[in-house]
Amino acid sequence: MAGQKQSSGLFLASLPKSCARRVRRMCKIMEDFTAEEREAQAEEFVIGMLEVGKLSYAEIAAISKLPEEKVKELAEKVKIVV
Image 1 (cartoon, rainbow, N blue to C red):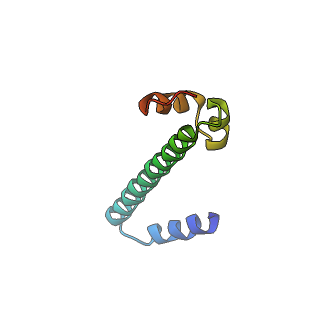
Image 2: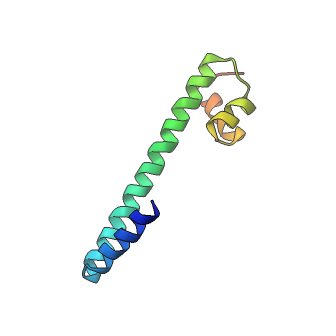
Image 3: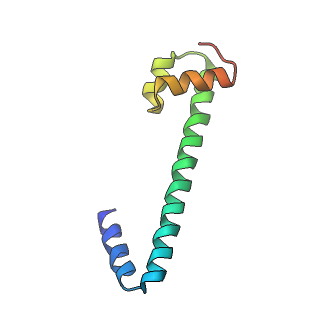
């Protein structure tokens, strides 16, 4: 990953400034999009665990790496009580 960032830095340095700004902006948009997608997938995963009903909120939070409050919020959203 570090090599990838270094080579992309060299690539950006070779572009005219206006193009480099646009490329950076597009990269930021894609990073934001993938972060949102990862969060949505984590939420779906948590909802699945809640539906099974065998784990506590704390256990689900530990497995999913989401805060326990977020797990409780999702449980309320889909009306599941653990």
